[in-house]
Image (cartoon, rainbow over all chains, first blue to last red; front, side, top):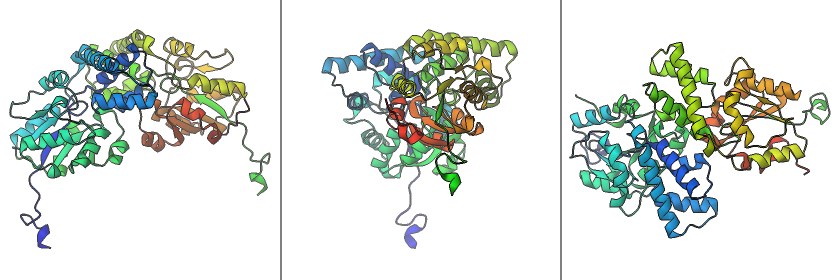
Amino acid sequence: MPGGEAGGRFSVPPPVFLFDLDGTLVDSVYQHVAAWNEALSQCGISLSVWRIHRRIGMSGGLFLNALQRETGLTFDAPTLAKLSALHQEGYLDRVKSVVPLPGARELLAVLLANDVLFAIATSGAHSVADAALSLLDLPASVPVVTRDLVQRAKPDPDLFLAAAEKLGADPATSFVVGDSVWDLLAAQRARALGIGLLSGGYGSEELQAAGAYRVYQDPADLLGHLEEVGVRPAR
Amino acid sequence: MPGGEAGGRFSVPPPVFLFDLDGTLVDSVYQHVAAWNEALSQCGISLSVWRIHRRIGMSGGLFLNALQRETGLTFDAPTLAKLSALHQEGYLDRVKSVVPLPGARELLAVLLANDVLFAIATSGAHSVADAALSLLDLPASVPVVTRDLVQRAKPDPDLFLAAAEKLGADPATSFVVGDSVWDLLAAQRARALGIGLLSGGYGSEELQAAGAYRVYQDPADLLGHLEEVGVRPAR
């Protein structure tokens, strides 16, 4: 089988990583949940908090579509705009309690030191993502794709496709790293391999059922198993 | 097989239900998570929020033991007391946003109308549980067992054993209804059948792996499937 040999016709290029942000690199999912809960409640809309939690990581627009289907209500454009604004305001009120997840900065530093390419792809708008990104001390060379830069957010693959393109990498030989089912579905649709992290509060089996190649607890746990995803740190 | 016949030597008595409170009947898990996160942060202790979430439903004491093991830190008695007090204070600050879960009041009303016995068994102290209980409009005849009334909280079975005893029921022929892995482990140790609800934010497979006989979304979903747990509502 000559095609299976290293360097042959079907050799695999060095791994490239496309990271989600909330719940994957920074510990911000529960603040987003609380902000959505408060926004919905202020608009007189009743939705159980666990259902909000399970929608985090989708785009805000898809979240609101799903919400209308689940509640059977229809919201007019001003209400939808108000919900989005209240969520953003409520999240920014809580953003001072957001910290990097264990191992996030160390993991990115090891990738940088070993010339492993990576990018960030988040369903959040730039205005919301900025505070979280500032916690990670990323060099300006790391591409960041936010919601406002693509037409469709997760579980559509657009964010990860755009992130791979910015790296000059093929999505089909990249790893997508995310904490939510939506990341992993988007990974499959981009033909990437998905790595699930438990740090957003989903259960391991939910991430596996969404197609995760591998599931780790958090960035520190992924860092401890880098050889399972094709990285052999020299430094 | 005479023993298998209804009314024979091994007949099964009418079902009795032992309900957890937070995340099972009232939508309060995420407020508890936020309160613990704030308390830990105020004491300078760093723990990812998803790890807090996965410990909710244990007794506060066991939670703090697990926390010491996970962080490798040792807390003195005043710090432990301060953490508990800060959690209680932070939760009570948020309690106005706590509402009954969909179907909770309706489910309990159907059980009452059909003379199906049930009790509440919560890992919370009476002082914290009172606000949640008041949302359910329970008649005084419904036994409530709180943390302060037993020696060991979940995942030990004591709370459910005490609740069954107050009903004059055998734990081994009761159903325990809970949202957390700790409820379901305690159910197994009490030899009860466990019913898992997703409304606390665990994944379905986590609850199944902890031994759930059946998993439903929330009290409304359980109410829609009462015949699966031996209740045939006449009213």
